[in-house]
Image (cartoon, rainbow, N blue to C red; front, side):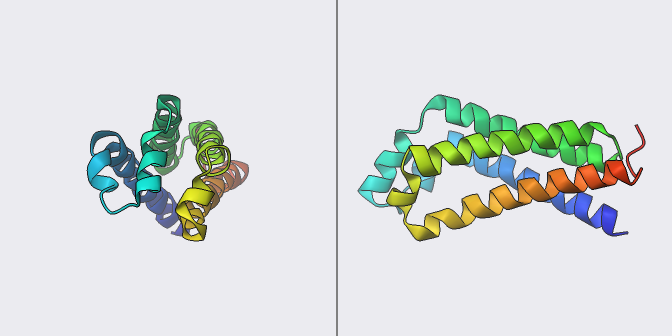
Length: 136
């Protein structure tokens, strides 16, 4: 039973990631309305390649979740790609581009949650493969 719960939660989480991606790409100005001037400047200076990596992370996360629900071994590869993309995106935005300085300590909360859950989804898919729960 808990396999299905974790797989369904992973799908909901990754769909939420797609919605956040869409709002950042298509409604960025509305999202940053309440930010300080420095924060707005930081968000607007994000290179396009970061959004490409973001798209890869959320799309492979959703695909990995669907494959997990279908009990497909492909979920391991997809969650591996998603995890790698999450690390690249967060390392750039939070560390290299200075997001932690601009957003402050509370700005580290969501990236930490995103990285942690990417690890959990990957670990769970590997566990499921090892236990023989993924059939093809």
